[in-house]
Image (cartoon, rainbow, N blue to C red; front, side):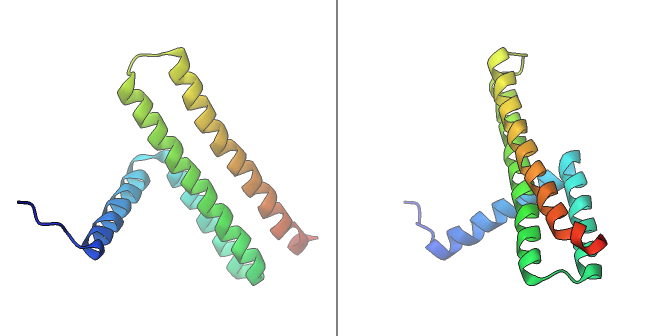
Length: 122
């Protein structure tokens, strides 16, 4: 008979799997590396310009949004390639829609960054 693990043990394992997934994403995906570099740049800018707590909340939210959507996009691409390795029109549409979601999140993040930082330079 298999011993049932406690809720706490299962949560620790879940966090471990999530952390492993995040590391795989960072190590293998150039787009995430670019997003991390941008996140570092705007974080340093925020420190140097002493942005407000509200601006920090929006900035951190946008960083999290873009990186999360990028991770979901990567997962969708890997699933699509696994399910149908050859080029297929429907798989291409699925990948395009996922990439479009990243693009939308990125545009919103750029607009948010402009709202935060442009006033510091005008």
